[in-house]
Amino acid sequence: MNVEDFGSTPEDFDLDSWIDQATRPRREVAIYRDWGLLAEYDRLVAEGEKPADDEAMGEASNAEQIADVLARMEASKLVFTVEALTQSERKELAEQAPTKTIEGADGKPREKVDEVALGNMIAAKAIINPEVTADQVERMRVKLGDGPMHAVYAAIAELNNAGQSLPEVPSSPER
Image (cartoon, rainbow, N blue to C red):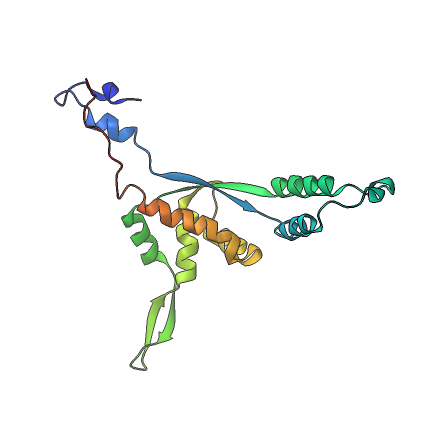
């Protein structure tokens, strides 16, 4: 939709309609379930092309094996859609996050937000497709490792900063 759909003059501009049709920054992030395939892919690429007599013995060519690994990687892929959260949403999640008792600098115990649990809660809220729970985010992090999940966390962090520096857009059409 373009600006004219909301009113062609400042007096006619319908801000409520404009707001109703606004969207938050979003991004798609691919995560692979079977990261062992990446090691297999790297091994096959490092081996290079095998001699022709391997194919005569019924073995798949190196290129065919690489294509098979890539197909299996693609089959293990899940694409998450993440969306920016508002500051108030992140604050609300921080207030709900579990705490743990730690020893303060003065030697007295104090409560501190469990940052891993909070990160899982933020990720679960920011992932809008497929819907996930904080427990599922934790299970993915533990099973896949921090590295693969980093792509999700990085996208969420980037989206929370998106729009803070706006691109230069002309305020009126050139004549």
